[in-house]
Amino acid sequence: MADIHKIDVFNFKLETEKIVSYLPLSYQVFGPPLGVAPVVVINHALTGNSNISGEKGWWKSIVDYNKVIDLNLFTVIVFNIPGNGYTDSFQIQNYQDFSTRDIAKIFWEGLDTIDVHEIFALLGGSLGGGIAWEMAFLRPKAIKYVIPIASNYKANDWLIAQVKIQDDILNHSAFPVEDARKQAMMLYRSPLAIDLKFQKEQIKGTYAVEKWLDFHGQTLGIRFSLSAYKLMNHLLKTIGQFVDDVALESFFNETTAVIHQITIDSDGLFMAYENMNLHQRFSTKYEKLFLHTLNSVHGHDAFLIEYEQLGQLLLPIFNLKTTKNVSYQS
Image: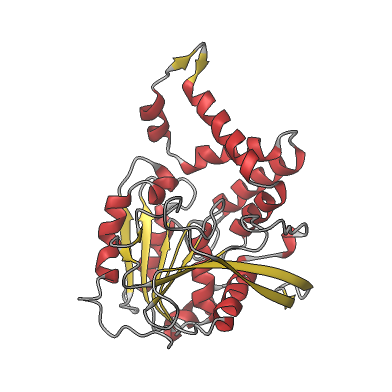
């Protein structure tokens, strides 16, 4: 596993104007050392972390040596959202004070600290994709490729409603993490995927789908803290909350990034029609905006399952034989 590094962030000013005296920002670097290869930044999703590659890497089928994002060719940086509990016991109790815009600013501060000011590609799935949009809004000319996956630039009413349900469970259930995770799993997978997987199978008088939900609830309850879940869930509804139509127009007028939205046709959390609406609105006048679709029965989690299909979409971007004008900080 790649070494875990830490940056101490002091007196960070949130969008709420409140000051956070201290935040630990941990991260991992994979592939060549900084300064000798194009930099790829990947943002983790709700229950994810910085360990993206290697034996236990959650995206090792995409990011590794001789994979689509080839660690022979790219330096990959992954930050942990402060408070996710992966590398330390630091907790954020005032989670409702934070937003994805704040996390994006913290990540940029981290990149500045390690002298990375230009990014070849910025990717993120789900919550990570929302943070990727926020990072792009903050520095429209600092990223060559922006690739939000199973996400959107702004939370809609459906997503905000789901966050509310999760927040209520997390604050009122006797088994908050376990019960919230069960409900969330039904958003991450599609009805068809669930039906095909279980087909009303029973194990000792209990439906297999019920045992599956219990397993996921108990597993997350063991490895994920309540404070971390509250924060990550809350962040989802803050995606794009500071981006109105004027700001969005301004971004597309200013940015130099090539933007590849990757949506999932069966996604029940970030619906594909939202990405399509954005594409139809801006792709004519901004020719560097592209839309791709993962066709899958698996729902929102398809970006963690459909590796072959996703790899085919990403490969043209990360094939340095065909990608021109690669730049990186030395």
